[in-house]
Amino acid sequence: MLHALTSSGFFAQEHAQTAPSTPQPPAEVLFDIGPMPVTNSILTAWVVIAIIVLLAFFSTRSMKTIPSGAQNIWELIVEWWVGISEQTMGRRRGRRFMPLVATAFLFILFSNWFGTLPIGYLFFRNAEGLEVPIFRSSNSDLNVTAAMAILIIVIAEFYELRSLGLPGYLKGLLIPNPMRWLEIFTRPLSLSFRLFGNIFAGEVLLVTMLGVAPYVMFVFIGIELFVGVIQALIFSMLSLVFLSIATVHEEAHARPDAHESIESEISTASHGQPF
Image 1 (cartoon, rainbow, N blue to C red):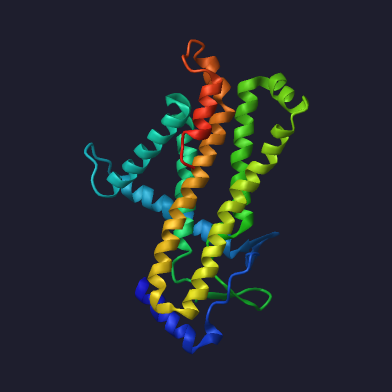
Image 2: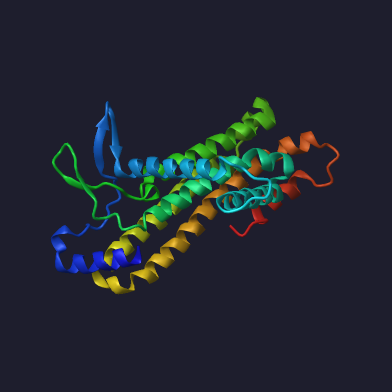
């Protein structure tokens, strides 16, 4: 991959007219499926989902008691997230939300890493006659990151409604409490813009350095791979914290004789993790 990127960088210097242009915030439309436009970021998301599903299927179709190879890697990921979830939320709630958070982590991670591949030279002529890149990191599109963030917050609010009951939930909204309303709107903004900004900036950096210093691209690729892991962790950990805070009352009702108070558990969920 590094050799291909270096060769592509040399080609970009010699033939600038065919080099990929600097990415723009709006994702480019490739084609339409009925009334729904399909952008290159959405196509990339479909490809990433297919890759994850196929990897999971072929890695676990012949499960063994003593794991080895790809099965060992998947079990390591699952055990790692089970441990983090149980440490943050307790055993019962942690195992309930672990699949959601781990899936978000894998999708974001694979999408971030997919954007570091030398895919900028693959073009498609859309219905308007414009040549646009076929693939683009899903998380460099604000629509994708916003959709994931809104989904997480909606799920958190739903479980908070279920744990508090309708009267308790409405009480928290209707009694003058500007911080409650503020967190409802700032949480999805924080999740979506942080992920979008870091990944989009990384794509711009890679394209820029491909034309300026292609022979040191491996340095910037390594940085972007690391940033991809960190951003996937941040999004997933914050989602886990939001879900933990939303369901902390449910845990208290389920264990009325618990030694820890609601306030201490909220403090653990909010400050117990480095992100």
